[in-house]
Image 1: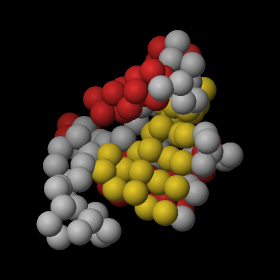
Image 2: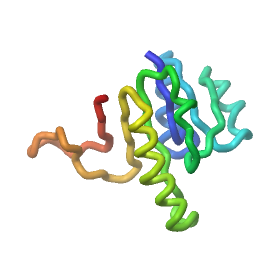
Image 3: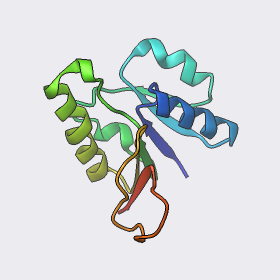
Image 4: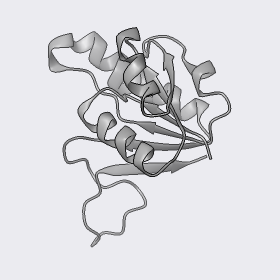
Amino acid sequence: MSIALIGATGRTGRLVAEKLHRAGIPFRALLRDEAQRAHFEGLDASPVIVDLAQDFCAALAGVHAVIFAAGSAETEGAEKERQIDRDAIIKAVNCAKRYVRTASSSSAPCWHTPPNAPQMHFSITPR
């Protein structure tokens, strides 16, 4: 199975990248900064430079699952927040075969969580 990790350089994304590397699971790291390439090559990832505000569907070609761990910073403003925290998620879901979204803070239980289940900090959207 091939995995794409969006937001690999963030707090949550780095943890996910390290876990994938330790488990020997190959992944494609979608990055916005070329300066991060060497770090992810050291994790045996395949880094791809993308702009999440643009069309990045080609970067997801051939992957079986997408993990979305990206998020805009509060200092980037409302427009960037909309582009990353809403629009990029929609693009990723539309391009993915299987999609997982993480949240570094508590997220609402997703649609398939039983009412008495512990709160989840991720959601899985089957395609």
